[in-house]
Image (cartoon, rainbow, N blue to C red; front, side, top):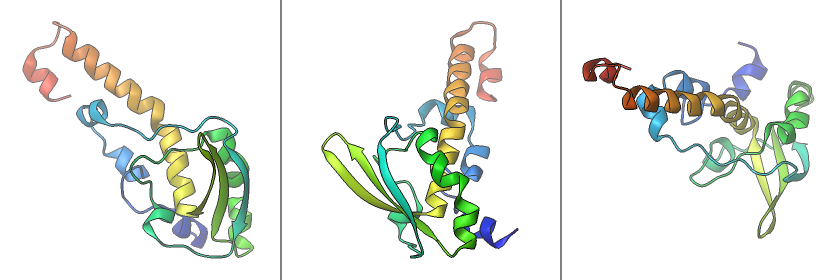
Length: 147
């Protein structure tokens, strides 16, 4: 694993790739993913050389919203080059209903945002499939238990 990949790979916590890989159909049914911010919510951002390792900077907190892929793309597309240039985090201004907030995010958190966005549809579909199976009289109860 490269130094960049090692630095950016989130810990195996909620919403990491490992988390979604191990998510069951039953768990997907009850999972409440963070809401998405409206497109254009990130009004400005910049890479920083400061490495922040606080939980807030490295993980997704309860009630925290996630930027849409289009808002993350400019940051993510230049992430490797930013890392190579010595940058280790991002500061973002985000437009919310009460005004504007500024937040600081480790590169790990940017990957968590991306992982949530990449898995959002699959989680929703898994929950829908399980619901259809449970509501169907085609499958026996003991078969449904193993889904």
